Image (cartoon, rainbow over all chains, first blue to last red):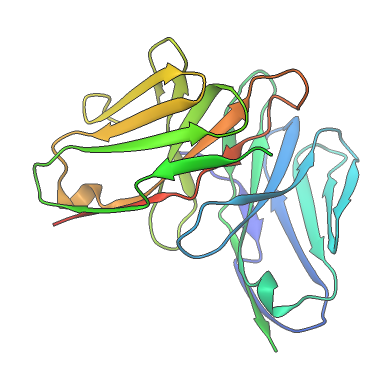
Length: 111
Length: 119
């Protein structure tokens, strides 16, 4: 099935550093969701974006709905060890109820 | 709010056995539920969309006679893996979309997943 391009694929960072990741597509989306998945668990919703240009925060997390509607960005400020996990973006096209998931960004935080 | 549960969390079975996985929305009603499959270190792949009171819609390449879906109520969808074989071993995750107008209807909330191992 179709997947969204997500980058970086993985990253190691030092505790306290800021993290940025993005999700891009050749298609236009009307909703973007960002999830975090821990090993052996289901994805947990972090942030939902519904309008182009929208910037939404959830604690140390900030996500933006790209103005072209073809991309989205997630930033994590002052990372901590519990931020370790896999982050997935998910986009929903206009006129469909289904979401397409990104390939995931695996984050590892070094204490 | 928006809690989704799955049962069982883990199942090990012999080849040829049928396995049923339940997905429940605990604090909201869900007209639509989704079933995903996830291989190790891979993303989620949508298998089918489960609609309450009607037949499920399957994604291309997913065998409907192999993966039987029943959405009998607004809070329960079941996935039955018929005559499971080792290649069906995977992590199966469901999600649910709230049907109430009070919350954004397009947001998906995921269950904790079910690890299926077929020997």
